[in-house]
Figure (spheres, rainbow, N blue to C red):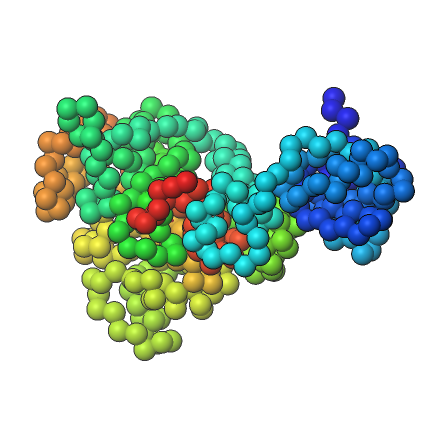
Length: 432
Ligand code: 4AD
Ligand code: MG
């Protein structure tokens, strides 16, 4: 066992001896004292080195320390209201592990500068809090579907076909031929539900979205589920259930991180306490007309601005279903007796964070699938592996995809989705 404790443990302990290791977060000195705020993966703590209480070499080492140097300190803890996290370590021993050059990130840097130096900016309290919340949410997604009897299952990333429209497809040279990067696992999960029935995944998806927005990445983490025998309402129930569970876990485990981000946890509480409003697309456009005077002719997709208006009416995500067939993917099931609308749903996050889940019941009629593929300019022969799912014992089924960074953005209250992932990829950025 290590002799070291984490800074969070030291703060909780508040007294007695402690050995800590971490990085210099802030430093200042007088001719008698050196104050170092130390950080590790868990928190920050003030440490004080008194010239009169340490030997000459220790004092000389302390004076040399710059921001981001890595050190080991041993000493005694005491509570002190003036210290940033309420506890101070009085240092008896100091070991310099790695000196630091002048750290390039100082106060008031531009977004672009921070993105260029993302490998260093990851050390900030801001990114640390986000990535910790993100980890809670990944774990909670798995917890939820594990407890619902689902199996984690993986699709290829190199894929033979499109699923979400050719315009956002990344084509990749594949030896002498070509392939595509996954937009979704879905077309490779559907064949598997005939064996395993209930599946989920969390994997990267890729979209060649040309527009730079605060909601789009070209590479994002896609949490998806697919289940045999599922009704359309089951898909919505699972979506609502997993979002509630993810937010609940964040409120249990990451209050301090939310505080670091200046995010009010009470904004999230309604999501775990209230049922999500559910409405059809037709009801949604009637509501937009009534409340905001916005006229959307049937058959037009909801745009960002309309989703934002809708979300402003609620303090939980809202589920919109039965979109016009023409605006949705080929695989969505037409509403029986109403082929102009499909059993597809979008979950729209509160506070203008946009679509966080897209899901549907899947079309089971192979002829309808072939016709829709053809209408979209696809060759159904390329989809023979997929169409086989409808040839051998087809069953009603469905699923959804949840954009992890969209949910992280909302839960953390971020201005831009780029901060919801360690190294964001956008049309304008594929480095560092
Ligand atoms: O609505 P989408 O395109 O649905 C699918 O891909 C389905 N095949 C999922 C399924 O049924 N298994 O994408 C699902 C979610 C969106 O609701 C959004 O949250 C996220 O993926 N998403 C993006 N997130 C970040 N950047 C992008 N460019 C995104 N595109 C979609
Ligand atoms: Mg969608």
